[in-house]
Length: 252
Image 1 (cartoon, rainbow, N blue to C red):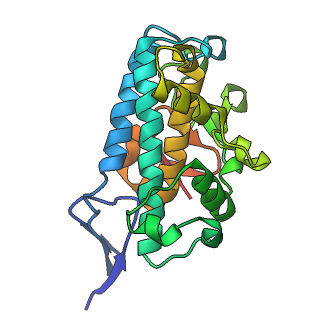
Image 2: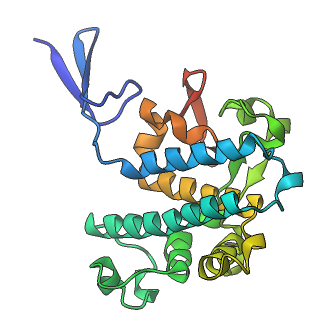
């Protein structure tokens, strides 16, 4: 009789499930959930930013650049962060998990029920206490014109690293400048067009990826469908365990 081991996640995780004979055992990998619309949304946003890099190099010397196209991308990225953060908090609570600081949030239950909305101050209180987002560092992979940089290059060659910390302001109990810029541009994009900079856009994208990495951790660490999510950033707060392909890191 063969022994069957069930594994919720694994290196060869497949959308319809996967079985593999290993010695006298059969390793079964459970099917992946099909509801990762947010990951696909981020991948689409990423493509739009890489199109910009064809005209404006991803380099800190260009971070002050602003344009109509960047304003559109910036607003979409920051708005998506807002939506994703709302969804993450509600999913976390609906799964029966408590936030350490939820008692500090006004109308927390009403917001969980969708009768009101969380705001950036709420995100700072909840995420910082629970996950210490201010400490999370991402590597900006294409920085310096390295358009085809591999996601794992920052682990092999520290000299190629360019750190981005989208929530570092939370360590001082302040909200990030990219978020303040977003609210200005959102309310008057003509007057505040110069706030829609490449630097602020990159920070907003980093905020999205940070939330995604905590919301869908196992998917982001192990699934080959997460490949596209690492073109722009590599989480430095995870340890590299190996590579499934040249461009697919495997984290632990």
